[in-house]
Structures are given as structure tokens and as C-alpha cells.
Length: 143
Image 1 (cartoon, rainbow, N blue to C red):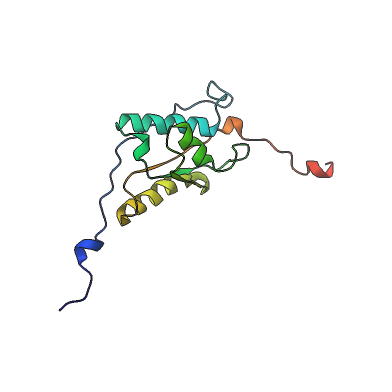
Image 2 (tube, rainbow, N blue to C red):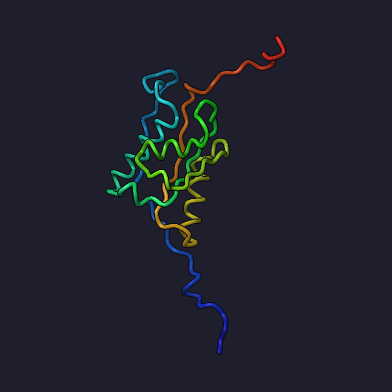
């Protein structure tokens, strides 16, 4: 009798993207500058879920990239998800890989789906360069 695992049970699953959305490209200090990165992220998530005709309550996990997270509060991915109507019980992870943060978030989501860990994941990225805090180097030293 063969005791090896059934290969059918360990095959990677197919991953498909069912909804996409993005905000318009805004200029520095332009018409979108009044919105924080998490607010912009919420708009994109909500729109992608609506386009996919997907109930936010079905989302099992969120991976969202964000680099300049100062002044966004703790866990920017959670703020964006909550603003899009995703339940508080959903695990949200903020990814920071500089310019590839959104892509890395999507890669992690795809790996989780392929492995069978989750079925429905929101992935993407958000940023607002107009709202990035501007710090003065050495200002604490009086320079």
C-alpha cells in the first residue's frame, strides 16, 4: 500500500483576478490632495468589489502596499479596508517594499490562494505624495 500523499490534494490552485480599480492620477497638491492614502485606498477597494459584484463580507484577508505611512495611523491597510466596508474581523496586512509594495501585496495574496489558505483576498497599494509629511533633517538639534 502506498503511503505517499495524494498528488491531487497538494496541487496548487488557480488564481484569478475578479475585480480591479484605481483612482485617477492626481497631480501634486491637486484635486485629490485632500484625501489621505487610506481614503484613496478605500475608494479603490470599494470600487473593485462593486465591479466584481462581491460582498465585502466575503473577503477573508487584505494585503495592501503603502510606503509613506507616517500620519496614517497604525495599520494603514486596515483603515483602507474598513473604509471600504470590509468587516473588522478580516485580517489586514500593510506591505512596504518601496516601489513594489502593491505588487508584493498581490504576490502574497496569490500565494495564499494557490496554497489553499484563503479563497477571496483584496490586494493592491495606496499612496498620497501630497500628504506625505515633510520633516526637516536635524531640526531637533536646532540645525
